Image 1 (cartoon, rainbow, N blue to C red):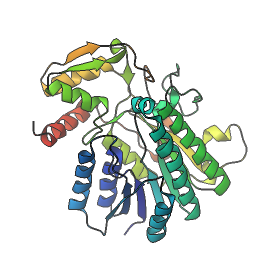
Image 2 (image 1 turned 135 degrees about the horizontal axis):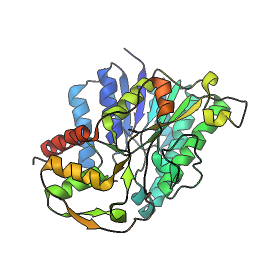
Image 3 (image 1 turned 45 degrees about the vertical axis):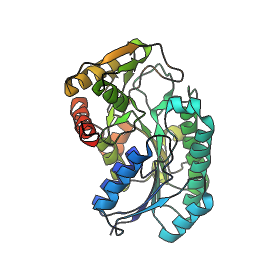
Image 4 (image 1 turned 60 degrees about the vertical axis):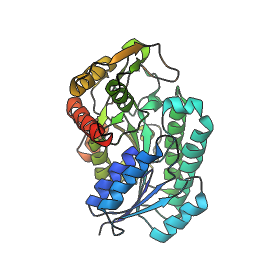
Length: 339
């Protein structure tokens, strides 16, 4: 059997799909999630049920635990001694971070620190963690490059993700822990989060309720299909950062190298919000009722990823066509919600 992999946020959207792929590939996955009520807990439990029904304890073991509980985390690490850690647990969402900032500081800062401490104590060989395209804020230069300045976040969520990158870099430099941060660009697909636009739009279109179109539709996103995200993570398992291939951003300002990398994970295509809605309408077969509104606090006008670094690193970049991805999402949505 392959190495044990410790995945935080295993009941989450990306965590669920990553766990399924790794179990399928023969890894033993040690999953952790606190099953909090940040969104529908039953959806999270349904994801876990899918995994447990398909894979036995030879491939999968779950622990309900908070990242903030450092002692319990250390007990799990001591029991299983994983070689690879994938941190996908976090309080997510720009708007939620404005409403409930304390939860974001607790989970995304304190919890992340505890994971780093466990990586240090148990000599982890590869630490992969979720960052976000939100760190780019309202940068005017597109597509966004990993070499761009990310010192001006416009939401607390973005600030916590930038903090994670700095914390990981520090632990890499001090303790030579190989760390890779992934700036995800608007991930969508089956089993997605209910608080994200694809789920909200689909729900309201099916129920013939108005969908809120912010900034009067003058928004664009780099939509990235979940299977492409999982493929990226899977390939990175065997390609950790090393001292000989340090972060190109860091190496420009210092001759000292440390095993830390940052990569954009996006589809590399800019999709206007109204075009996205139109594609959903066509797939569902129902016209949306649109309520045009002003820009929302903490939001950004556009996102678009430069993916050349990740392509050079693993020989792969997200490439799934939006129409295909949305079709897979809607097929799942109709089945899951019995429509």
